[in-house]
Image (cartoon, rainbow, N blue to C red):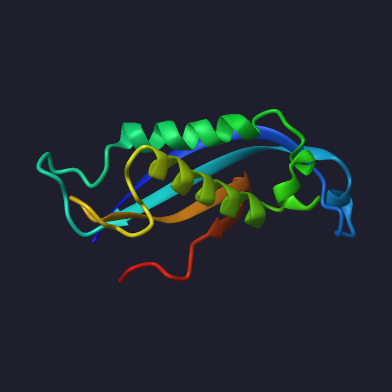
Length: 137
C-alpha cells in the first residue's frame, strides 16, 4: 500500500457556540491541513498520484476558508470545530476531484487511489482527523 500526503494552510476566525470556556469567544487560528491519499498501484511513471494536482485542489479549498469567520458558513451550524472543518475539506476535495474526472472515493481507474483522511491542526499539538468508515481494504 502506498500513501501520499500534501499540506496546505489557512487563517480563519471562529467560536464554538455550544462550548463553555474561552473557545466560546471569537478567536482565530492558523490552520494546517493534511490530505492523505492511498492506493495499491502506481502509474507508469511510478507515482500513486501527482502531488501538484492534489496540492492544487487542497489549496483551492483552503483558499475559500482563508480569512473568514467560519461561523458564517451554514455547513458548520455555528460550531466550526476542527472535526467539522476536516470533514468539510474532505468532502470538498472529493467534489472537486469528481468534477475534474477522477473519483478518489472508489479507487477506480488506472492507479486505484482514494482519499484516506484529512487532518486539521488548530495548533502544532491539536489535530482533528476525518476519515470515512467505508475505506477500501
